[in-house]
Amino acid sequence: MSGHSKFANIKHKKEKNDAAKGKIFTIIGREIAVAVKEGGPDPDNNSRLRDVIAKAKANNMPNDTIDRGIKKAAGDLGSVNYEFVSYEGYGPNGIAIIVDALTDNKNRTAANVRSAFTKGSGSVGTPGCVSYMFDEKGQIIIDKEECYMDADELMMIALDGGAEDFNEEEDSFEIITSKDDFSQVRTALEDANITMASAEVTKLPQNYVSLTDPDAVKCLQRTLDLLDEDDDVQAVYTNWEEEE
Image 1 (cartoon, rainbow, N blue to C red):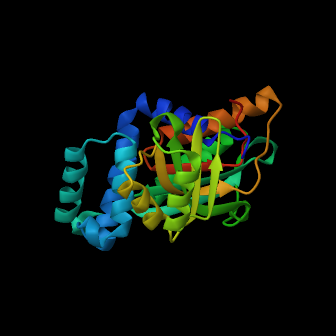
Image 2 (image 1 turned 90 degrees about the vertical axis):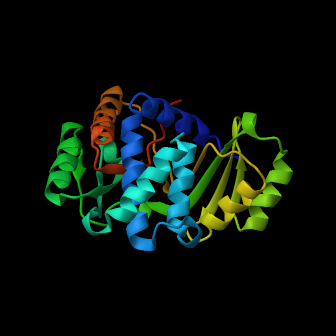
């Protein structure tokens, strides 16, 4: 059992996103477009699209909005030109930061990301400078208040589905999978009618780092806020142990 509450962070992110729901819908819309371009519009034959749809539903995106996004992407295959880019760098006190983006203009995105780091007293580093500190894993969070099963029953479904690890928090359950097994574990939980607060492939830090200097926290938050406001940015990962 970990002392770091993943669900508290999930709720925190959702509260921020609820204030700007257009941002999260833009992010998911681009992911749908890329998934359709790579594997077609049928989620039954496109596991990446299935995963994006699950993410969309976890963020309360209406079904008709999801369907419209898939149809638009399928009809616009020739014009979908988003490119995946990733940046790595350091925040105050050496906090590791990874920024994943989908963009149609790499120069614009690079300039915006560099500006966000600089304004928060951080710096963009070279590829690979901090990614070794993270593991790419599937992470599924289940709110205890939304779960009708006890911990042992839920754990067996997850492990039988191929999960690597199961953790019980004060307010939630966390299921960790390999990147490759994420879809089948999520499907096993869906088949058992288990509601998921969050389900995505993410980058988990191997160790968390605390910040005790209020100025350093303020600077790091400045960088994270600027990145959050950028429509090109899909996800930001840090090893910061955020105070709850």
